[in-house]
Image (tube, rainbow, N blue to C red; front, side, top):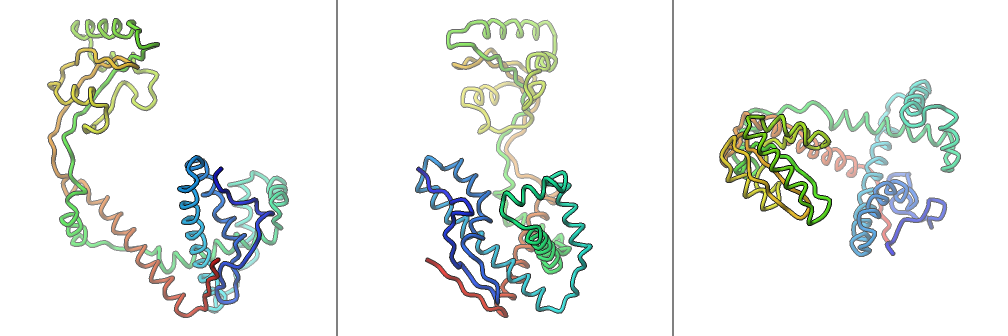
Length: 308
């Protein structure tokens, strides 16, 4: 059985870190990690060693985030900032009620069930507001990425912008009821007759792929060889543009393919990826500014970690 964090009331508490005069406990770290822990338990519940490794990493990340929050809040408290009015906190509470609870009665019942007082809840919302505000002031500022940096990144990361051979594909999938079902193959041949009778494949795909939400009207768009199973990929990339394949059988289904366009392997043009590169560089710069901001706070604030 995979290890799981105990419920909050059952946590044997201990000190994980001290930041200035603020104590961060194991219970706080566990509570902060719980949503991630639930996801990890679902994904790795059958692999206890992997689960424990992932959970340890998540707990470490949570501790670091709580240390960062404590550093930021300490800088606010010791930095001579004007005290925020109660009316602002009232607004935060009302916004949070609308977003997460619907009404105040539901909020109070939820807090009571979680063992959280209204004052603790108000303080948590205020702390988040202060943390976000100071991070925004020091990190999430407008970052200008010059055209030179974008072009330099593009030329230094050419492998990221390579595109393999691609086809623009439309496909009809006729599922079999069993391995020896011949109805799907018969239907595929009837569809081919309609294509030969000048009914467009797109119209037929719209009819026979009407139930597909993922690929409406049988449209797969531009794909490379890795998207499809081997027998379908081989057929798609050998088809001339506009031609419809013969029925392709697998144990589960019968397929008809039509390639609408082809394009050979190539490098994406700078103009096509400029926005993508700019976002990447902005995120990198924000990460650098965030590290510098937190490192600066650490240099002037007492911190001590307590590890078991």
